[in-house]
Length: 211
Image (cartoon, rainbow, N blue to C red):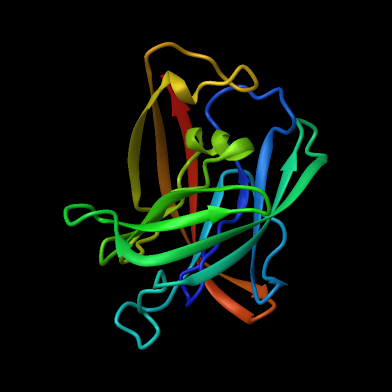
């Protein structure tokens, strides 16, 4: 994801379970104005490009009617490209409700879409991935998150309980609720060359698990 006036997801996203359907992983490249900003990422890697806290550019970017366009690529178990898609995140700038920390967002491609949420505050930036049609599998995947301020070597965990209505014979089937956990580790900063120039990114690596 990018926290520099625009936002993105990066990486071949792992999931908790076994997937034998159309594709085994989903890869997102972000773009602004149609320009692809980054290509290539390690499995289970989420990158956050940010600014020094308190800087002039350290402002909210999930504002009303802002759109972020992604190229999503699906891969099989041999990491061969199986499908590509263009998907758009549109932020509303408003909260789910008065007591929720999440702002509402909408994910859509050319044929369908669904609502979701983001958290953007002084403590973190967190994005709920798309979850419609083939993207339902991402409900079992690590959700992009970076803690603020960014501290290399910092580690944290997050858990999500999923009902069996999220199960699918293509990737995993269970009864009742399944607990999906994610372990995050802040790695450090690195410079990434993009169509917008070089961005200083904060790298976070994640490991999913389920029980």
